[in-house]
Length: 365
Image 1 (cartoon, rainbow, N blue to C red):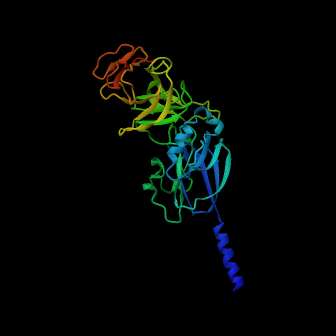
Image 2: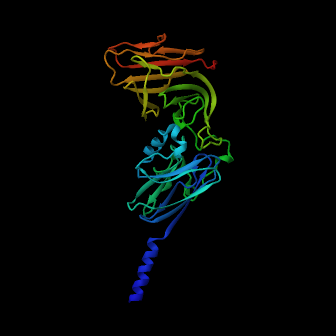
């Protein structure tokens, strides 16, 4: 009986400490080849991360439901991102592998959480985190059908078992610049040409896109044509930029379009939220004034509508709005009145205004 008891106990011990082997590859098109995997609660996991792509990637495992918060925290690293391998300080990060260069691999050994749940893994390299992620299921129950799994990217739900078995398609076999078809509005947090290290590219329509600088809290430029080419190799030094698939039609040259009070304008980026239509509304401070800014395309003309609103604007403060004059650009009020520089909100008026900027499609800057 003693011998049997020992054998039984050793069997349980071996089962408890069986290592779960997982291989995940970074492949072309901002994807992990394996979009989800399953491990028992409390199990020992050995994760081999291989970068078979031509750009750098990392891999962070986050607490359940905290992927977006971690991606946003990584984005806020701005110019400090490369030195930190785009891994922010966050209690929501459970495990991490720093930036792995093309052709390299890293091993991560960890114990899975004891609590059952769905724990995301994500690449927080700038511009990647909104689409390059997957789900670690900590459970011994059967997984939901992939087609209806809301924990994986939408464009990966139709790939059947290939997404779970490490067989995602490689974008190098096609000429697409994106891992999925883009239907505007769409946005990337990414390094952009002629902009700061914390840029946001927004695809408004099939013909119009803009670059917004989260450091300076302002519009940098607008271009027409296609959106972005992100297929070229990126650099861990942070000096690689996406390519515009089109030409600039408007460049905003001043440091900030809103002048509130005297002296230099001190700005602080606070984030954004998406409207029901899918357009980002940016939220920031200008000299302590809470400001919201939304840009969306005009419906009947080729141009954009810019809406600004301030929440705590003093009743005695005047707001001046500046923009850049140029060939082929007409700046008017919502009612169609042509504006002179600067546009002015006088003290006591409603702290919200809307302007339209209309572009001549034959004119380029």
